[in-house]
Length: 233
Image (cartoon, rainbow, N blue to C red):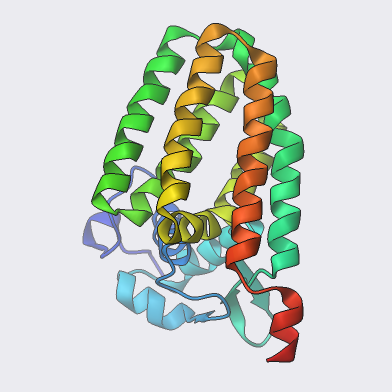
């Protein structure tokens, strides 16, 4: 069977494959909370909705499973991964180990174009927060961090961090949405991080990155029910 061409699909128009477009749309739904943790993704229903065959949907499920956003069960199919408080703590602890090292390595290699790109992302981020656009600010938060880490030249670590950011994104959005103080602090810390980078202060940037990641972790663990509480329900 030949897949329907992207121009006939109900998926957003992306400059990549049909499966890639399906991944992007399903990822957006998961991160925005449109599809809840523990919810099954129905292959046939999604193929019909998107106007494509089941093959790219299966490919999308495999990609999302590799990112940790879904779990594929033999008899239930793809189910949106539900993370416990302990899982979230572990993800942020991994970020705390990897991201300061990346920014420390990246700072000496950042160029004017990198700073301009980061500034542009921060401007869009501020606009998204002002407009209450949760989807946009989650995506821009990830994009901002990765834009500064890229020049580190550590492609394997960068990919690990990208996956960690994707997995923690839906929870970071909860933290920002539930606390005006958290959004103000995020804007302030992002701006301060860029300032450290401009000054070439790699250690200052690494220190702030560590504090930033751990502060979000702490906020989230206070907002979300503990695993012990879940067990008593």
